[in-house]
Length: 285
Image 1 (cartoon, rainbow, N blue to C red):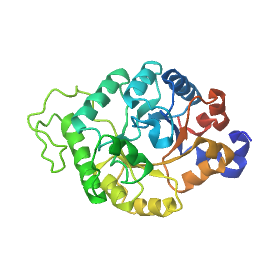
Image 2: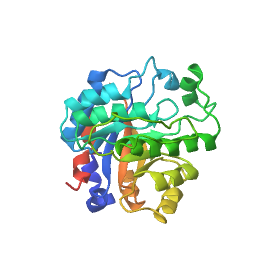
Image 3: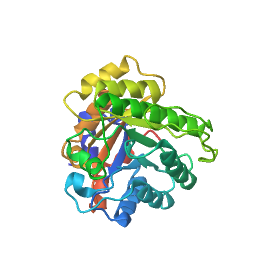
């Protein structure tokens, strides 16, 4: 059933409080297809498009992956209003200086539209750790990964404020660093998190947090609300097909206090299906 036919059940005013984004998977993808998907999303009123940061399709059993910044740059020059960014940049593989250069280059193509998601890397032994194992990257303990993520966020802010020195114990610091970014402001930094300690890190250091839909997400959002800073954004990653199957989840997301729903989708995928969600009806502007 078309999403607009569900308005009586979930309430349009409630739906309008939630922004709808797309997270376009780069696994086994053609960049042209990703661009077409992003252009269609912009036309339909989706607020942002995101691309995951993976260099191997092996993490999901696909034949390849695409570099997120190449994809985002292609999207940037073919769109004019939709926001865009990586979700999430893997701070186990990217030094903040390299990430800042890539993000700032994207800002030059899409001024005022760039956001940057950052994450602490995969859990050792998980399917997403395949990439790290392949290049001999030691993931360390959860506490170490969080410490590195915290210092990475601080390092990114230091780069955008043109602070030439940032000392870090986890290898993400720098000395006499200059001439990395232009005068664009630091983009919103969103931390991908599923555990409360990482959410706390986001509350203390970042501009928002992106959660995964789990049985505990409601409780986590309640805890966030107890200490949520002003202008701090809470989003949740969900599946596009799951949302089509049960559009009332959008209203439920609004009632939980979410600011955004980020819906994962793969290409090739029928672009026409994006209109099934009719995301434009849920935006305030």
